[in-house]
Image (cartoon, rainbow, N blue to C red):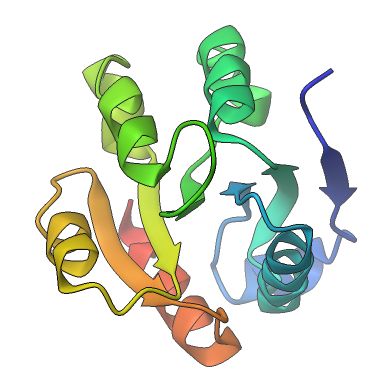
Length: 154
């Protein structure tokens, strides 16, 4: 099985509905176990995700998305995608992601993550139509929470 970890977030529906924020499904793709853990904790603290699933490789995430792209229960509204990974890197993941149907891509939002200062990677991420933004590692709670709340309109 290629799903490394499924973290069910505690249900706080009264609080969530009172703020009118839906609870999204998040996929985190990062080869670093440490970064997956930190990003899961930050995402959990936002209280905006009903479920968080992490993958240690882009290949496993693509397999999961391909097998479940019609399953509304595991439809990811947000994907946190590391740029530099062994095997398929974040940019190669996006090339494969481009093959998904338009309805899928229109409702899923990719946020790339990187600790890189490489201007080529930054420019490449920021110019990609499938990437809504590039965030620096480590993921910051305030920045991430505000970004997800901005996406509330999707």
